[in-house]
Amino acid sequence: MPEKKTIAKARTAKRQGKSPSTQAGAFVHEEIEHIREGKHGARSAKQAIAIGLSKARRAGVKLPPPPKSASKRTRQGAKRDSARAGKATHPSPSRSRAAKQALADEPRSSASTAALSRQARAAAKRRPARARKAAARKAARTRARHEES
Image 1 (cartoon, helix red, strand yellow):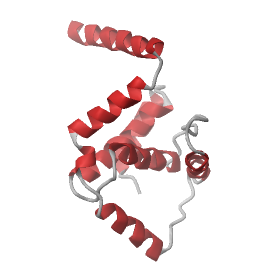
Image 2 (cartoon, rainbow, N blue to C red):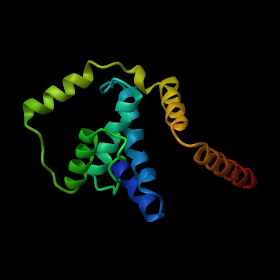
Image 3 (tube, rainbow, N blue to C red):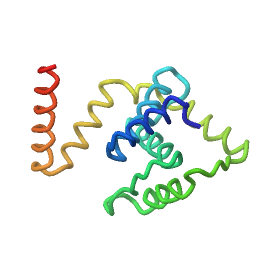
């Protein structure tokens, strides 16, 4: 169950007209914080992000399932999470315990700055040069705007 402040951040982002991925960012950030404070671990930075996105979908963020390049299982899981939005169904206690125990045994280093940086760079490399260039331009514009104020 996401924290109330996380849901509030996502709602604020939605009210401001931000994209679903920005709204989901609050949930991903919460998950990274959980790993850093030792609540549980993750096999990789990618898994930490995936858990956050799953929580976002279940909380009602209208995130589309990943594109065709993702595995069928991943896409089906994303659809299932979106369908569960607003429904408070809980897994059986034994299943919940097993999932928590599995994550508790995973390393905490997957949420380190270096690991997240590696993941971001790898994800960026998979995008076309055009998209990377557009993102860099937008970042430069944002920086210029922040320097003004």
